[in-house]
Amino acid sequence: MAGQAFLSVPEFEWVAGDDVQSEERHAELIAGGTAWVAVDDRDVPVGFLNAQACPDALHILELSVRADQQGRGFGRRLVAQAIAAARRSGFPAVTLTTFRDVPWSRPFYERMGFRVPDEDETPARLRKILDEEAAHGLRRETRCAMLLDLTPPPPSPRRRPGNSPNWR
Image 1 (cartoon, rainbow, N blue to C red):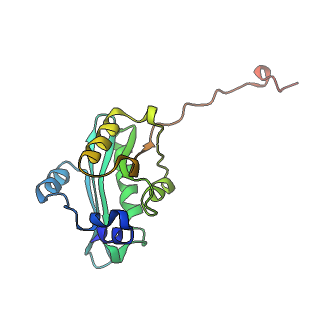
Image 2: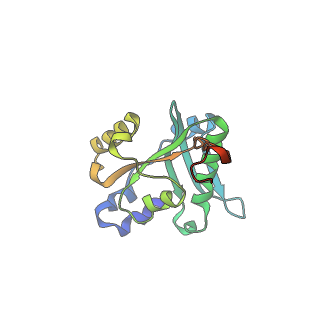
Image 3: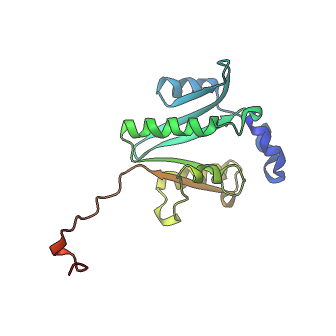
């Protein structure tokens, strides 16, 4: 079980024994095309990523890789698969909530290009999720929302030599 890693963080040991998503919820996400499974070289499942389509983003609900398979790139590939699917579907962003200071959590997503938005730019949907998590026992200060912007940057204006102040 991937949650066993939390046994090494005294403040979050309880996560290791916390409830997981129901089988029915997994089935809904699979049917909706927002669930991915990683398998090892023997075709044995070692991890999964579940996401939910929202009006403004594909939202990652849960990423889990078996403890004995962590550090082998399965999580990275699952997130990359979700990002690719979000791009194909035209989502402007991929979002998630995670632990702010757990060493393998926020930094993992930051290495993949996600960032913690400023509070004033955090979408209301993500603030609501953080509030709901707090109501279920996850202290707000230990959590953060993360965002990967998929919109292409605006094209830079093309300058012709005669229009540039640097040309002489």
